[in-house]
Length: 258
Length: 184
Image 1 (cartoon, each protein chain N blue to C red):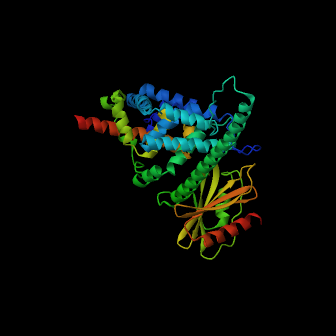
Image 2: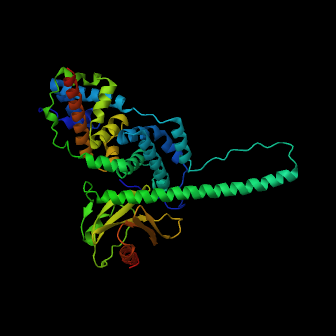
């Protein structure tokens, strides 16, 4: 190794990313080359300075507590109410019934609250992903109108398989697809053009214990649709008129059973 | 890279999540602050990341790289957030592709002594980096991730990680040198 070490190699050296043989060759070169030794030293010092300067922000204790609660499965621990030791049996029974009822109502409210938060978060995520895919700065992973190109592209990338419909409603065409993540699970995002509008269909593996679902909602001017097809769950979003979106979803759903 | 789905149980399982995720919370928050440049947005980003990670935890293959997995969720969540999209629209990710590290003269006192810059100077220089270079430095130097882990988080080949780390340090060095020259 007589020529100077390139910058990538020097940086890999200070990051301890070279193989044993590469490291040995680099060491031999550094022993005879003051310029590369200075470069390695500069990179090592810069790495150290970045590590120190980069560890900059610390979360507040309140936020840390909120995250810790969330990590325990979004469950709140109810505070215990003090009880007098000499409470009469009758009063205790009444209190117990009231407490039980309150607890049930609180749990139901909490479940509803969690479900509402979860639904809103998912809707936001789907919308964000759809808008992101339409951004000109965010090219699709695979751009093709050919279903025989798009479907095989997902092999080995998502842990499930799905069919793409051969015949699409008039004015609808496949544009391409993205590999993405929806609520932390791998998802195939299929982009269709319907007239001048676009629709995203997110295909994921349905959670094993969840019931097959079908739902429809509106969010920030977009139509959101969800349906199950065998082991798959499909979530769709578009601002096209609902009839045209439904027509696409019908052929997509039919294709899964063919 | 693959995230295998675990069959059986179907509801999100919190068992073990807390032990794996909470130690990474300060790091996730730090990186989120750097990316969003706002502590409020960072809190939203981290909270959403934990929410998604908890929901998807049943699909995480135990024994594989949890740190890379949850950082990937953080980054993907950031990229699709309003601040992430805004950053993407204002900064070209490849604007420094043409940077040539070979133009740096290593053997100067400035090059050798850059690390003696005070932390405020380095932080200020880091703030000037485009997101694609900043995130690779945060993962490599602050989080001490291996190139293989960074490749998993950013979903890019290891060779690209290698060149991007090099480019990031080169641009950071130039920003620091430029700032030093201006103060003279």
